[in-house]
Image (cartoon, rainbow, N blue to C red; front, side, top):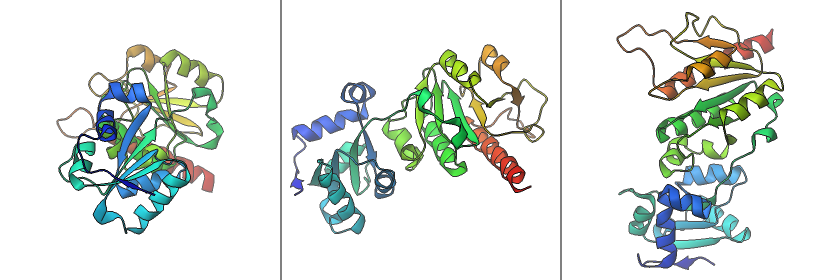
Length: 270
């Protein structure tokens, strides 16, 4: 049976609010997700929040009823609260109808089966949560096997990254690792490493992308280090016909991923 909380001073509200900060997420192993769409995507993917907060005027919504039932069946707690408190939890003036608190989840690198997908996304020192969330959405869109984060990337469980992923955080496996470990794992099996680089004359539509292809996107400001680029089997670039020399990291990843998908789909249909 859901309980009601309407006081800002409630200890649970204070605890959950702190999850907007990385330090507290790390300490608790918990993170926030908001919105009926995102929480429904999570539920469909087998992820159930430990706590579910929802506004009183949303209690009769069929998706809220489903979420409450799933949370309570899994031993979690559903909390009916006010829009003001939901705004405090999410940090938005116009909060979504629901906020969920989930246990963090990532996968070890050696748990990935590279044969399950033709496209894998790899990001190195990604700094912007919006880019990370958008890359996850691209991964979901092209059926990528996962997103492998190299080095000191932005926290994929920040509320901004979760929001930008629009639920893809719960559908695309995430691995956090270091470059040397990734490279050793990659070279132990089949797979082509393709780097997005300005330092090449090969256009992105000139290369071929067999299954599995690993697309490596470098840091937004600095690109990928030269020693990383040297390890790529192929380096390609996207032509720029205007004054800008490159695309946003997330957009470039999307352009590349859909080119890989198009080639692999055409090859499979021959």
